[in-house]
Amino acid sequence: MDADVKKAIYEYIVSTWLSGDGRGLDDDTDLHQLGVLDSFSTLSLIAFLDETFKIQLEPTEINADSLRSIKAIATLVTEKRAR
Image (spheres, rainbow, N blue to C red):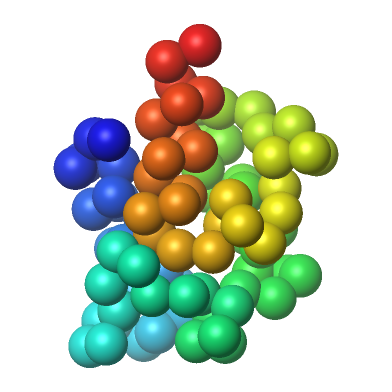
């Protein structure tokens, strides 16, 4: 997995939804339990991934497991970019 991908996702989440305060957020933090991802923020995250990494997620790839954590999202992005 690409460290730059994880870093970009982390920075986006911290700046967009955590007011710049990333304390307590690591690669495995459950973004749903943290209250970061809901239906609206998920759409925003998907748009960010599309614009930043030039990937198109299929509807079947957009689910609670694939978007659960920074690590899971970075894995998804890395796999999509490899295709």
